[in-house]
Length: 345
Image 1 (cartoon, rainbow, N blue to C red):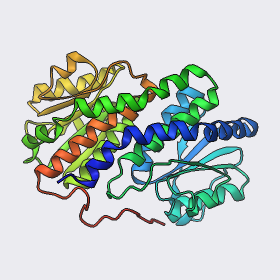
Image 2 (image 1 turned 120 degrees about the vertical axis):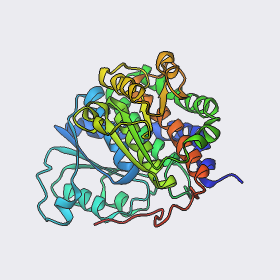
Image 3 (image 1 turned 120 degrees about the horizontal axis):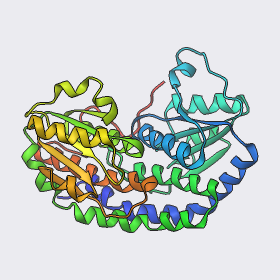
Image 4 (image 1 turned 90 degrees about the horizontal axis):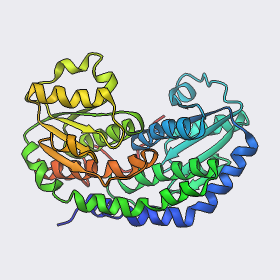
């Protein structure tokens, strides 16, 4: 029986295509408003998977748009009642449901301070959308599995579309337009994940490492594995991993390295260290030399621009999480103690 998790995972190419087709004019209009406002920085409020999309947004806006982007600290607003100054900032709230009170509170305070506010959400009638001046809807359709798949990649794509709209260069839209087909190819290339993951079913710990744009990917894969398999997974920047955590590596601790495209010395160093320690090694990449070094290779199509690579790279991680969940006898659609909408304050 096919799970909701897998069904929605496989809907991602169509979901991305719909957002690109139907959301482009909205993204362009929002970009016009942002240019008029001329923010000096961006502040992004999010939780859970949306927070990992926000992490992608930090790299995206910083590298592509030279806009300093930081993550909001919602408890400043809701628990400490010590909201920082947001004047002159673009304040973005990202939430699939648009329901979490702390994310809404950040947007409400930002609007009170006359900052420019944007909601990125799948629910146009949500409290988050109502609180923001601007709304970029995900158009992902209903997502019934508790663990987000298509809404996560739609959030990342929405941010990439906004970044491209701010740069106002047609070649960027051509690169965006190729994404749905790249994601479909990635799903097909990793069909064996559900079987390959079975050999890791006995492990209850896992390290996931990434860097740059794909730090967000490593953290999102980590979350998916925790949610659906009950494994104690930890996600790291490969640079941070060398500042102490590398000491925990041994032959009983698997490593999943997210390494598409760009070569990072520390990330390749983690892969070499895992080999030296005898750690089971899973590599997600489009680089043949490191895929060949892995115990399990999760391939990506070559040629994806680095700025868009997280949208395709997360998909093999989603499949890996699904495979682990099924191998461990868990129900990926109904993780224990979790619900689709989580409200934090």
